[in-house]
Amino acid sequence: MKRALAAEAQAKGICSEWYSFILRATSKERLLTLFVKGLDFVFDHDFPSAELRAEFKGLHEHYGVFIDEPFSVTEMRRIVAFGTSEGKARFSGFCAAQVWARDGTKLVVEVEDNAFVCIDITDRAKVEITASGAAKVTVFQHGGECINRASGNANIKVIDKR
Image (cartoon, rainbow, N blue to C red; front, top):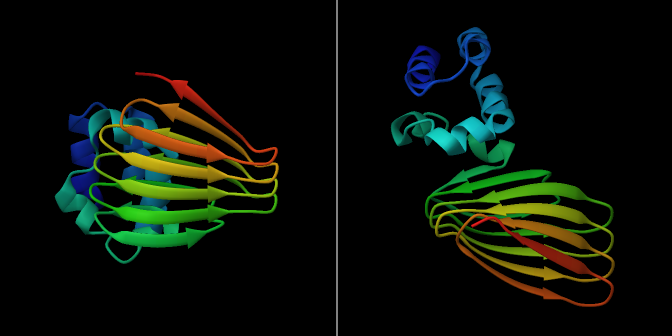
């Protein structure tokens, strides 16, 4: 499987350093770690293919990667939602997190207390954000839809990248 991933990545223009990282990966867990660290390449090149993503079913959720599935998480530091995923993410206390919503994802995000969350929205993704307390949310909107409500001293900053 890692040879198929490496071949697909190479065909899509991955650099030689990351190509060798993929080939040297000793487990699916390591490949998922590389996936999350290399999200810029993943998004820019629609990598990996749906067939190869399916190989990680049952494992990728632990790494915050959700593909065409419902989910509900609390305090997860990284969330990447693809396809037709529908989910809810909640952050509180002094949590710091990053969220990526793409394709046709529908996501409800609740941020409270002193939590800080950065959210990237692309494609047709729809994200509804509620922030309260002293929460801070920064949204990079490359596409999709963002609905937000802030109360108390909470701040939601939307940066339009379209």
